[in-house]
Length: 402
Image: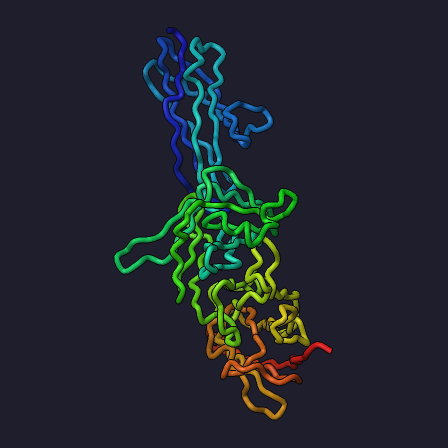
């Protein structure tokens, strides 16, 4: 043939831009004809619906080659994608050359995979020690502002001494978790018997049944729960322990560990406790003990205040927020009773950024529930750069229902 351009190869590389590390799509075009090609264009499309068809509304770039391409020679056109979506995207490249006599080799597709942000999905509830006839499950929460597609994401536990890891693929199909949405990943369908609302098509809860009757292999005394996206990047992980359960719950079998606040650190023991509902868990629903925090401009603030650590699932925990007059420091947080006696040490020279949060469960150093009444919270912070130390204190009230 006299005129024949061929899309020989697509490959991906990466470069650093103002927005961070971004992908570069490289397209190798070969002149298979007998005549030189003076100029041509290459159009790139984001195949958002994965139908494999070109849609002019999905065009993301148009690349031009004005350098003549001799017969049997090749040229590389590259596109730096400045604002790609996270996850897997399919890009269709299509040669535009009016004199081309063979169009069947003018098109090719490449999959571009980018990691999601850290903690775009967070581990929010863990059932690692289920009742007889039940199996393990883990709940995830989308704390971001964009949907998250968990296709080909993996869930795994801590490696054994021999190096083996229990790994499960969540789903080979696209599954979007919307902002503020929850996804329950269950080892098998037994969860439906205990929580029948998960089977209701009208519920907001999303569930994936992995058909693993042997479970995820989560250890009863403690283990890791690790969530990785399609690129293998760790999105969230929790190293839980059985001692994270409430000390006044003598039998924790069949009761999940719930995160007190999904916005706070998942590897802080004080941010986890035992589910208080009778059925033992709240998969796909707000946690029974969830506590929110409110934005503050003060150096120290409490939410809620008063709070009532009576185990009923309502305002059982107090979130202590603090701000320091420097970018990083070592924080000491102590709680005193009205007579000035130390009741609890929440942080002892803990390295922190310029602001942070910590949870108080209303218990003393012996894990006993404190008496109702006012308590003084004292925060002392030392600048890591040697600046002047900062001190703040406030009063939080431990109450009970009337």
